[in-house]
Length: 620
Ligand code: ADP
Ligand code: MG
Image 1: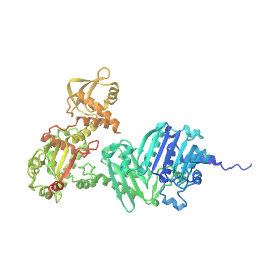
Image 2 (image 1 turned 180 degrees about the horizontal axis):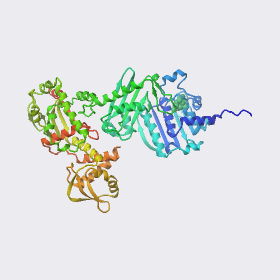
Image 3 (image 1 turned 30 degrees about the vertical axis):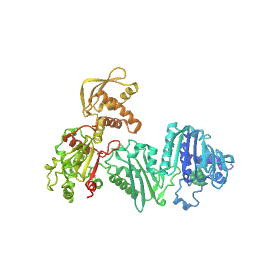
Image 4 (image 1 turned 90 degrees about the horizontal axis):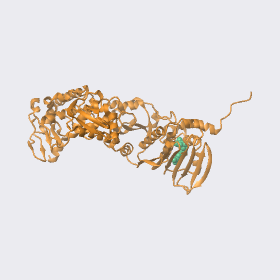
């Protein structure tokens, strides 16, 4: 029998190899964008048609290529990025295998126009299924533009296995986001079927995040930074209250390369422990810079997994960096003492409440806590422990009583001066109880605290309290109702009516009682017990309006949306007078919340005006 083993023709070998690199249009997007970044581009434009199945085009203003390099770039293992095996261990560019263009050229119709600064004319190169169909001189700007048409035109089996356009587009967006985040200094634009979807100017990371994820991320971002001899961490984490039900918005970059690593992801989750529910995922974009020799990125051409030689150290550093930045920005629940880091955070942010605030709890009406969850009770206990902790601190008396003594007791229209009832170092808890709260312009609640003066926004505080209450009630379906004297009829347009039908379980679990009453109308018999608005129609319509508005501006699930909407609509507004008991109850309830510092949409609920700051006003 004659010999039967033969070398595969180049075209077939390339096609097989291409299978590793090019799995779907998003792989083409990734490779081309990375090449543009590697080429030092300042502005990169991505155009996709039919989710990349018809066209992926990337144009850049990078260094471009000479005629020979243009031709070479489509050869397998042709790269300008490494020259020796040692280089493999110090890679700082995105690409290095020299496989991408060869692979893409094997399974698509590719047209490349490129010019570098040394040439007057550029090169046009057309490659189709590995074969060079055309090469000529053309007028072209400095930089490179590559269009990849009809991906897998010659491999029908692969083409048929592509997913629907929305799914493929999602993959493309994932790649686009990863590269745009890794290179905020580079401008990126994205056109989808001629429609401009993103226009991102070169900027700082925070601006890039906002550009990609939306304006409401502005208030969510907490900087995270840490430097050790071993590695540096830099980036942003999202405040706990913005955590999502889906995992999507979590990004790790090692030496500017996006990676997936469950172990490091776990480090971040652990740092958030106790701040977010188990089924929620915090936002983060974190960059780890580490000597490349400690990282093995060369596991697989398209895989995003990496290996570290010392994973555990990195885990520890990431966890502590995230914890620290949560603490330093006082986004930890201020009264949670379960962990020592929290305590430091509070001490640093000056959130040491004095006896007056702590003891005011004693005289409040506890009925409002009847529906609280165990979580709230544990917060209350923490509050007590805060009190004992504060008392045991040696500087306690000095700080509380030393500087405050002598502040006159007086209130005028514009200035508030707080009377201190705690001048006596032996001030008993009994005495503290009498410490009043003030309402300023029927808008703010003022209270003396250990570090100075707390100014609380009554509306925002109430919104936070209601939001957490409604969220619990929706989950446990135990919202209480107040019965209306007469049913209120509410006519809705057909779209709103079907929305109400879709949301009726959630709406009812908050304490609304209603029936369908004719075409597109409902009759409301009861509203949530905690709500002050007595006009059922106004309340209900407002709730639906707010829900729709939230839906357009926020990416939260419908339970959270509806809790937020009702909290916003039914919170106490400026202009509403509050008596002592109401103010104290408000404060107590706020600090029993999981996240007392902010409204659900990230506005502060209170600020602290430290004694130092006040003293500064008087040049003391
Ligand atoms: P790799 O990026 O791994 O080197 P590629 O197949 O992606 O391999 O690219 C091959 C070579 O083509 C690169 O090393 C680079 O020299 C050149 N090249 C590719 N794209 C560009 C571009 N947009 N601008 C300049 N040079 C490029
Ligand atoms: Mg490349």
